[in-house]
Length: 96
Image (tube, rainbow, N blue to C red; front, side):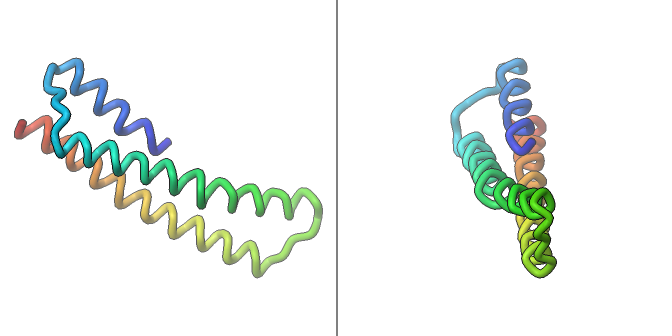
């Protein structure tokens, strides 16, 4: 999901003929790459580990608690980065 916001912003910028590969677009692309890395390096493995434990009926509650906390922290980081991306895109649309 974290890739959709930058892609839609990129499509809007191309449609409005305001696409310039300047520092703001590079920042948006970099942040979107960080979002994808956080998703696939932290959240997906944690979810798979929790799912595997439930599937094999060997639920380790302390491990699940740590994994859920890791997912919550990663989601918080993603939320902040999404707000930054949306703010940068709004700045581009309004002021550039």
